[in-house]
Length: 105
Image (cartoon, rainbow, N blue to C red):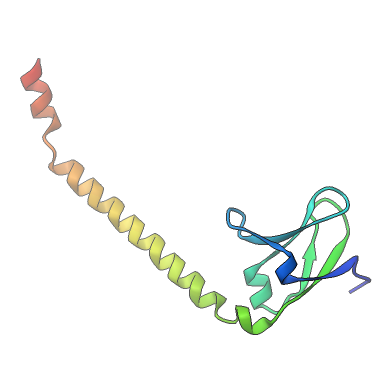
């Protein structure tokens, strides 16, 4: 890879929970971004989506080696929320809203 704009320690970057990336300000006004998955895959290059600058992220790969396991746990959590959605549907089927509506009219 070519020359880096800078080398930044992961501790100097900010975690964005919504986008699920670490970010660091870029001189162009946007920000460099790198995901935990990239870090777990031993990628250390954060890119800016608005310009061609890149930075090298200094971090300990061992801190991110369990990332995939954490991601699988998150997916299991999503399945649980889907099953709770099924519980809501079951509860809705048991409601007798139409009977209550008829009595009020």
